[in-house]
Length: 354
Ligand SMILES: Cc1cc2nc3c(=O)[nH]c(=O)nc-3n(C[C@H](O)[C@H](O)[C@H](O)COP(=O)(O)OP(=O)(O)OC[C@H]3O[C@@H](n4cnc5c(N)ncnc54)[C@H](O)[C@@H]3O)c2cc1C
Ligand code: SF4
Image (cartoon, rainbow, N blue to C red):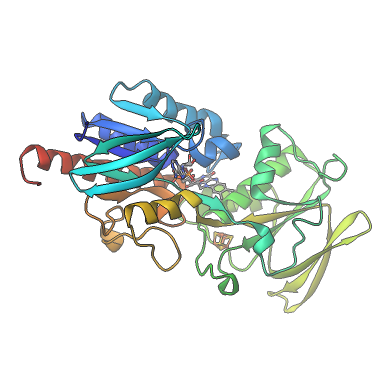
């Protein structure tokens, strides 16, 4: 059985980068992806990427092609890891395909890159009416429309004259147990606001936020651009309720800058849903015995100085399986995990392991 290789679980941006990194170091990779295609969430669900609105499908296609064309990478689609035994240098895993057929495989090291899932707004404690009103949608629903080159009110198919984003839906909410910032949604909402203003130049676009969290260059590349070039209105406020009024949506809350109640009519409301660990990430915790940190993501041991080593020797994590991450973080972690896994194989070759 092939022990001299690295198992990568998850074929999103982090897993693709990890697989590419391991193969670039001359080592073999077994890449297991639960879906029928590689590319992860950006390939499956998004139209454009920050900061420059590049085409998500094209960008991910580049990452996918260099993996599928690589003879050192054995890709298994529609496959999940269902059991594992062994230790660093000699893991044995059971893989299950969609037909239910099981197969045992071996690997010296494992990189878990099973990512995140979008927060389900039905779990939100505020009353935003996602499952009640057609014109309340999420960032992900908006990306689906952008893929068709349009943004419309789902209720009547018409372009919206007024649009608002509600930030921090499912994030920074102690009541539902998500005590973290999802890191990307301020940037993504601002990116989408720019796209809406490009598609419907007459539309008025508002972003209701608790505080804007723009990291690094996004401040300049997205936030100021949205305000100055695209006239997006940022309103510091807390939205508590969305209800129907005639054929519009009445957004109620408090303008916290002015310190007064706020009620505004909107055609379209977009909920900035955050990131939670995916079902696969939770499964990997159970199957490989990787502890989860207090927010439910996979735990790492090195704090800021080692973002990819888990408490289980020989098992590394990359991307949003370890917490809310943007693409830059996910790709950097993929590279770091690849280097550490390949180093473990090299140590094995020198007899330093086992
Ligand atoms: C609305 C929204 C828009 C975003 N847009 C941007 C953006 O423009 N720019 C940016 O920098 N970031 C963006 N992000 C963040 C970006 O999506 C993540 O950084 C990135 O997808 C993380 O990559 P990943 O590979 O860790 O996880 P994912 O993309 O989630 O990929 C994980 C992969 O693992 C697979 N998997 C899961 N479980 C299993 C299992 N048990 N077995 C096998 N395979 C499994 C999944 O099918 C998936 O293919 C956005 C996030 C949100 C919420
Ligand atoms: S990135 Fe912005 S919208 Fe997302 S959780 Fe953090 S503060 Fe809220």
